Image: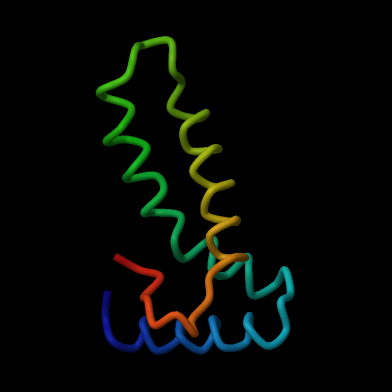
Length: 81
């Protein structure tokens, strides 16, 4: 991730913490969606064929939304890996 993009997402996080609105939450979701998809693909190859990739991605998106809503920057932990 380049520095410019990282600075922009930091600004979005700041605005989200102040406003707690869906607009900024959606930007954050779109930003981190590739991580969800990558993780779902990695997990999917180790699961039974009956488990659908789309179901894993959906569950990952729900987890991402909860993580964004519950994230507390005051704890000194980064959201990203």
